[in-house]
Structure formats: C-alpha cells, structure tokens
Amino acid sequence: MMKLVLMGDLHYHEIDKSIPGLQEAGTAFYHTLLGRFLEMDAELHISLGDLTNFGSTLELEEVYELLRREDRNFIHVLGNHDLYWQTRREVLEITGQQRYHAIDAEAAMLVFLDTAKEMDFEDWGGWLDVEQLHWLEEMVEASGTKPLLVFGHHPVYNTTARSEREKGSIHPSIDMWRILNRKKGIGVYFNGHTHVDSIVAQNNWTFVQLSACLDQHGFRIVELTEEEIRISAVDITDADVLENAPMLHQHMVHFTPNPNARGTDADRELVVSLLTAVQPK
Image (cartoon, rainbow, N blue to C red; front, side):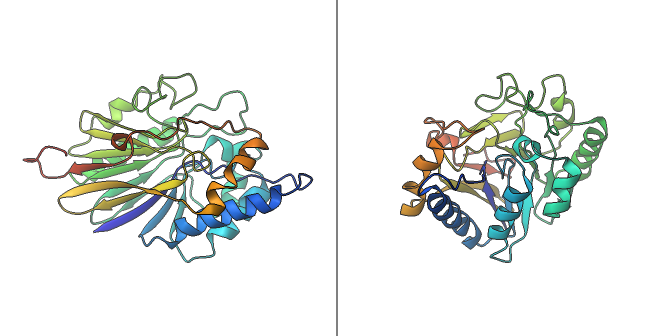
C-alpha cells in the first residue's frame, strides 16, 4: 500500500508585526496546522501549490523551517502565489524542489506538474510550456495500465468547481485532454487554486480539488492498494487553528476568504476502484 498526505493552498504569509496580537495568531495557526500535517505517517507529504502567499524569501524560508521539524518526504508543487515575488529559478534554489518530475512507484506513477506563471500579477491562470507538455505525454504513455496520479496547482479547464472561470484553470487553449485521453486505465488529477472542495469524474479520470487551508482547515489522505484508491478528508479542529484563522483573514492581502469552501462529502471523499469488473463506489 502507498499512502500520501495532500495539502491545499496554505498561503503562508509574512505577518504585520505592528498589529497587536497578529504575530501570535499567525504563529499559533501555522505551527499547529503544519504540525498536524507532518504528524501523519505517509510516504509523501504534498503541497498542491500556493504554499506561500507572495513567494518572498522570508515566507519560503519560514514555512520550510516549520516543514523541516519532521523528517518527511515533502513535495511542493509550484502555485502562482509562490512565484509572485521572484523568479522560478530563485524559488527552486531556496526550496530545493524540482520544477516538474515523476516518481514511478510500484503502486502507481506519480507526476508533479508546474502550471504556474512567473511574476505575473495580472494573470493567475495556469500554463504549461511545450516542453513540459511533451514530457507529460511521455509520462502518460510510460504509466501503461498502472494507476496515474497527477499533481498540479491549477485544475484542468471545465472539470472541478470554478475551473470554468477566467484564470481559474490551466488555460483552455492548452488541450490537456489530448494528453489525458492517452491514459490506459485509471487516472486521478489533484489540484488546488480555486479554493473550493470538488470531486468530478470525467472519462477514466477523476479530478480531486482541495480548498485553501485558511478556509477549510484540513487535508486529504490518499491510500493506494491493488484494489482501490481511497481518498479521505481529515479536519483539523485544534483551538489554535479555529480561533486564530479569522484574525489572519482580516489582515491578509492577496487572499479573500471563501465561506463556501467546504463541499459536500461527495466533494471531499471517494473510492476509485482499480478492478475493472467493479464499478467505482
């Protein structure tokens, strides 16, 4: 079995220390939330992008210091907010992460995309260059009939909730389905960006979208066996998280709270059967 822990948009941000109590609120919120994230045992701990709110050196260094409190295999998919302040190359140097890559595990092929535009304040939509698209097509082919799990910040256009909106997805001019339709067997695409929970099945693909941690405090567990892919939701209800989130919302820039972030159970949990004779539950 393989187990993964997924985190949606965190938007870790630099705190305005001139506002009384704000620094204490930020410390309590992020320390507790990321502590819960790290304490879950899994092969991989994955951020689906917008780990930071502005991508400044301070934000990146502070959040990575928190993430290194536990010895976990952490993968950071780049989001648009992570690339607002500085170049992609500079961010990757600070984080030690790869831009895009794949892990060919026994249970599944895992593909991590870079869908973010660099230092573009006007267009927060997603994009993949020709080189990455060719690489993705090669990975889809290489996965054969093995389950394929793809992790990107932006959704595929017109799949999950809000992905049909302007700048709400990978740009619709990029024909992602030309590549996705080459998959033999089951594919699951995980993303963030739109700040609302959503699960949608189209063709042989399931699209799983996570809301922002600041709105909906929690994570997703993904468990793979030979028979199924089980996606379950974990809510974080610690007082340090619940009580301090409203103050952070009040004093954040580049982030607007979404009161409707939490979807129904069907938008948060799912079992995908890997047995062809059995229909997905």
